[in-house]
Image: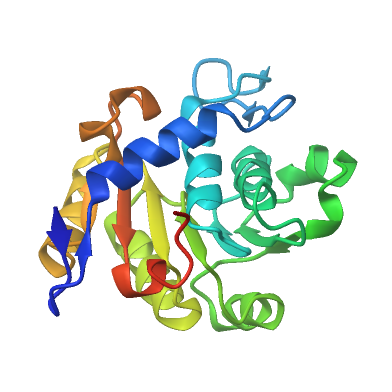
Length: 226
């Protein structure tokens, strides 16, 4: 059991387990990874990573209606989060940010395209921040999977957790490198009672790079599923 400084309880292990279970029942057919970041990097992967199901399940569990994603790539994770949100909130939408237009190969062709706002730019630049806030002044769900270095990731987290005030923030690859491990150590220091590496609870969610979660119990209490 974890708790906030004011003593409000949140069982992060149970939250992770329930999200993982719920995610198995969410249809992610056709939600692939896109261009590979491993091996032959010109190949297109139609594989649905297991953590997409976790993202979808968590979005459904916390009854998210809005989401902000930093790091789109082809857009598979954005679609997974959106489908999870739509399991409880049919009018849900997501804003996703990336430096590239690679998602143009995938997102515009989907039936969900109208509910996905793609912004091209550096998520830590003022002009990009303004664009995000124009489309989503608040968000229930924050997902960060962009430049895998401590400083830009910490900036992503600090900026968007402050401005959109999510119920949860999720981070991919928290043990992928020394730099990302340093980022996660900082998060564990600042959010000691409300953060967890989801792999420690459900290893099937992600392979060795880890998958971090920070939750704000007082915000979850306003809309968490029973």
